[in-house]
Length: 226
Image 1 (cartoon, rainbow, N blue to C red):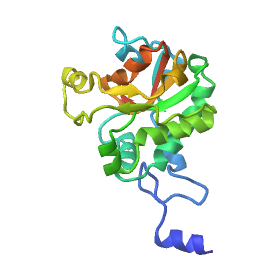
Image 2 (tube, one colour; image 1 turned 30 degrees about the vertical axis):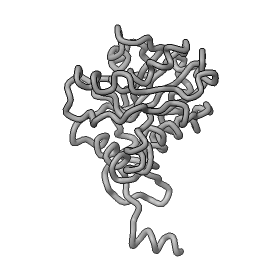
Image 3 (cartoon, one colour; image 1 turned 180 degrees about the horizontal axis):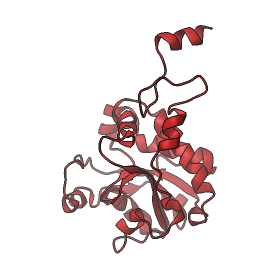
Image 4 (tube, one colour; image 1 turned 60 degrees about the vertical axis):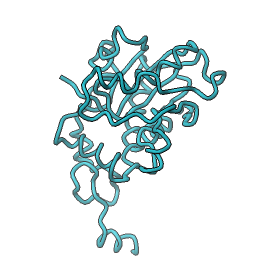
């Protein structure tokens, strides 16, 4: 009764449309879940996200769960996740995506899930790493170990917003390192980011793993598509 009264005064809202959630709903209402613009890229080896990395880095498979567009519900979800402290959104959507990836032959054989890290300064300011929360959801539904401390940033790169493709690469060219190479050497690694546009950040993340013969898989919650 107390919970019902509390929800009446402070209703739980859908992270996509801001409408009140029903008692059995969590994070995203059923209607918004049904209407999410899924890419189904995990079923196509030559999808638009995979093509981003062609000729740049060797990638076993790359995909994104949702299509990103401005002023869309997907943008609202990402805003909630990154700037409104609604980190559970990332975990929830990651879990949904993980169930689909678990059944996808192109994403089989993965040993570890590793999120794109934030620099300690940005992590302290935000309080959490949004990519890590997406990775948590993936780990839960795929039943694959999540490693959050092995990959780190050497320096703090400037925000990627409004940068050109070339400048984004210049900005993150060689800023990531691995703490324990023996743990992941030769393994199949799933790198997780929130959004893929040019792919520069996650490309930079993959470089130290390539040096120790890891096979790289990539996913994001969303990606810009044509």
